[in-house]
Amino acid sequence: MGSKKTLILLGSIVFLLYVPFLGNAFVSDDIQGIVQQVPTWTWLRALGWPSFIHLNVLLQYLLSLLFGLVPWPFRLLNILVHTGSVVLVYLLVTRISQHPRIGFVAALVFAVHPLVIESVTWISGGVYSLYSLFFLFSLYLYILASKKHWLYVGSLVSFLLSLCTSEKAISLVFVFIVYEWFFGTLKQQWKKLIPFFVLSSSLILFYGLRIGERMHALATTSYQPIAGLYNPFVQIPIAVSSYLSLFVFPTGLTLYHSELSFAWWDFLLRVLVTLGFVGCTIYTFVKRKAIGFWLCWFFIALVPMLTPFKVGWIVAERYVYLGLIGLCAVGGILFDVVMHRKRWYVPAVLVGCLAIMFFCTQTVRRNSEWRNEDTLWVATAKTSPSHPATWNNMGDVYARHGDQQQAARMFLKAIALNPQYADAYHNLGASYLRMRKFPEAKQRYAQALSMYPALWQSYRDLAVIAYEEHDVQMAKTYLGQALQFVPNDPILLKLQSLMQ
Image (cartoon, rainbow, N blue to C red; front, side, top):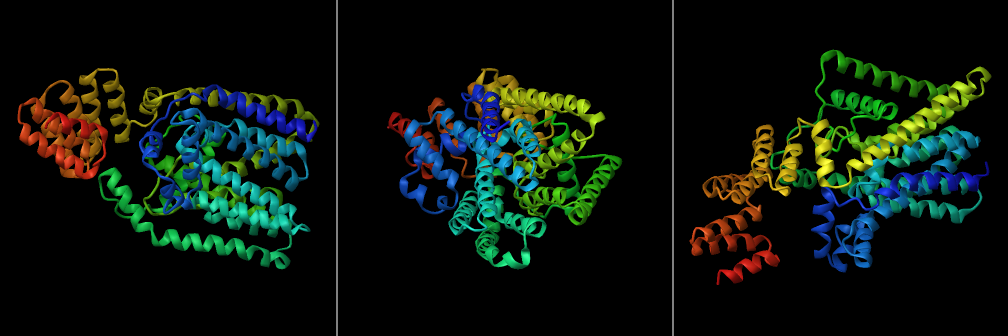
């Protein structure tokens, strides 16, 4: 099969899997980060600090100007970005391995694997596929630039764009080093790597100085202090073993990988799997460079997500988008080895076809779970029952459908799991308000505000209750407190005019 036909086939497969779900709704962080934020942006904010260092923010703003706040243009961008990454995976793996079949298998698995869904179907997760695309293009240009200096400049620019899309790209300079170690001449080419190091080091310094702000912001949004650090001897085995398991058998996919408490024997097994994987990486680094490069790729891409600071999840599917390419390439190499043995040729083809069909089926099923907030949170409740946000979101599902009694039960479950969960207290108050249980509602709003005084929606609802109880003066007081946080909110301004 010619390379053009191969690329068309790979692109068509991506579109067949994802375009039917182009109309999926905004969900989760999409609502807070796009629907509620974009209308308040200005060109100055979009081009100025802090958004200038996040290219995806600028792209989202431009899409909102062109198409409005509808989901499909944002999701189409993610699909196109993933298609571009699949094409580059084929080109890169084929060039490095010198074998088109290995490149095709690696790109095909990457195209259809359900682990990439959070970075494609979820609009807010698109930042992971976008910075990966720029990095893949940068590496490809770097490999081609041995005698063409303008390609080297293009590689450097693309690497800068990757860094300006996400801070997660800071470790990727080491992929260039490993590439030169395995396939190039590091002693001769090290000067070419200096600009990449300078760019990465500058960003490491920048984000290192801001880690305190990041932790404070997370503490504010989660309504509880983020104290201490992850224990890397626990964090890393759980993360690495989970990603390997999800690569081979991607079931139980969830937005909240919160079920991470294991029996001693289970954790020990995860440690052994991780140590075995590290051992294989070290062995192939010395003896089998074709595989060693891609195993190193997996670790390098994953490093920014394994920091001990509690600013992220231990396991999240979007975190492994770029690292997954390394595993896909290793899979392609091993598949090619088996295919060269005549007696294993037919079984290998059958197993390979079954694996691709399984991945495609899981991708379609998981994409359907992202169709809207109701389907997403119902699916999440089955896989992540220990996370408080799961039940807060399920409460929203029941509230939207008018079942306030069941919604209140869900919010109480969220509070039981996290007694400092201000959002859950507010939402519980809102359910009581809709049931016209004013004393209970006021109690819950007061609890929410004691934990998070900037939760202006609680002041708004307290103003409504006071007005319903004919205490206009108290209603105006609550309304004034809400307006201190959002002075231009149209709903608050309308309520203010009604109370004049």
